Length: 231
Image (cartoon, rainbow, N blue to C red; front, side):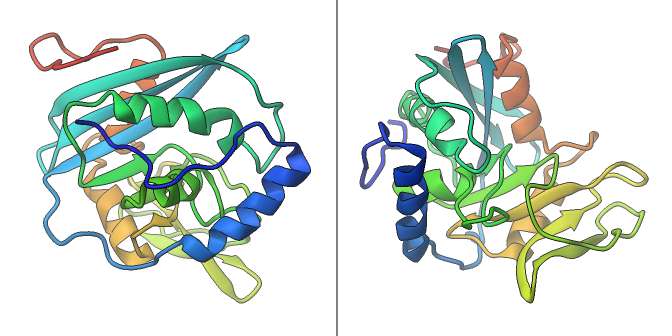
């Protein structure tokens, strides 16, 4: 079954062309609450080894967060490393992995930025727009914006600001640990995105969907009893 883009664009672009495309895609972003009933959450992560980029998508049941399925894909690295343009290095292989899924998640959480991006077009937003699928960015570090220190308790958060604009949230997913940077990808709003990420952090700082996706992207399989498909 998998998920396929509702529209595509050329990926073989210069950095200047890529930035211009990001600006055009911004008008397609939809900010709205996530679905009220979520049963399956997908986590997306990407690893790069030398000249190869590998994407992993892992589906987990929600709210019990049991791994259901994983799919991976690998492609040569074709786009140079340019801050703010990582979607053009990682986007094609993520789309390839998403098409290999048997099931369909209700929402995708990316180990990447969404609107918390200089042109409001991080990987979570870019892929969410191409798929027209609910997507949330949940990054381990800040790409842009300013913020105060969030409360130390689990669930505490403060807005991530770019001038007067709220572009994300700085979220404490576990008491006393470093925060994560959550932002809207597509067909999500900040409130429900933050609630989802916190609900997916059962034992660790990282939400279970992206934590599993990171492990699978690094070559670790899902538990054999739970693995439905792994490419």
